[in-house]
Length: 397
Image 1 (tube, rainbow, N blue to C red):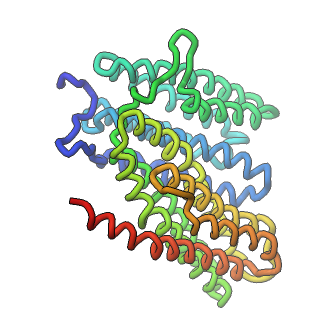
Image 2 (cartoon, rainbow, N blue to C red):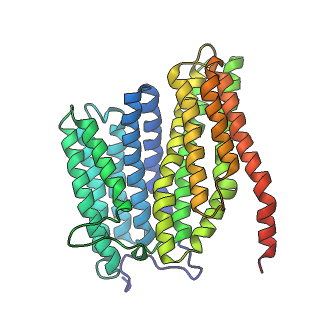
Image 3 (cartoon, one colour):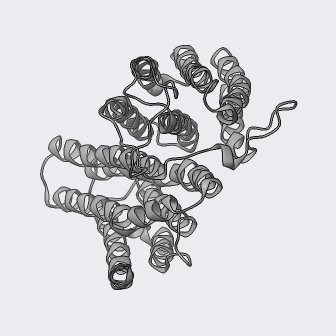
């Protein structure tokens, strides 16, 4: 054991690596994202969407909280690894409970979720106690907020009538914590200077979660098409779904993710903490949520590609890409863009036009229209920004 205990030792380059055990931990969330997408397909109502939205924010919060923790703690230390394995076990219970989390599996879902959140924060607080007093106090504050939120989760598990409101309150309370800097009477509030974030590691971890979400879109496309008769409308819907997923990936990763990581890395300590909180912890909720909704839409469209489009398929086919574009535009604006990406705003306007005039289209036709919009956004941004970025790279010493 070194003087830094369980904390990461920064490399000479200042960039912490993403370790294989972190990728192993992420496998639980491959399952969780699939469960969320399937739940949305099987509960295609406004009430079902609200329930799934609450569960999604809970799952995202659990993952991103671990990303924060492994930004400081060294996953190669055995005790940290065992902590991650324990979180995986709890996460599997949470994920298995998702389809019936608002019904007969509410109790195991809530107990496992609260245990994961409190256990992670308590372990981290103890690990930081002798080595990083500022962050130690941060995790004491976080434990207070999580205990309050956890009480609502547990109460909702045992009260079916009030469950939706109690769990919505629990999620709202927890997501408000970072915005309030986890203020606790007597302990004060956290300071951005205390959140010593390793920018490259944090950006890479969030990018890997985006890949997990895209994996569900690819699986939804392949599984849905494999299970039906390969008609012409179904084949077109399949191709449009694949092109749309590629366009979404391109829009996030081709320019935005790399530029955001570079900007993130060059901020001072306070600035890195603020970017990690706003751009990666909050704005990625819309980005990942958009991908999950788009994956659910793919399943509905490919299953019934021709004929009048059902309202749930219509809404999800448009809402998923719209959420993604809005979240990605805000993410790029916060992480270095001088203005809001015009291509993304144009894409949102085009989706809004489809919402007004697209009901006459068949499902596969709507999928083609949306894929065309997303491809246009990706191509527009690449053609408009690539020359500028190339010039900037040539100007560097």
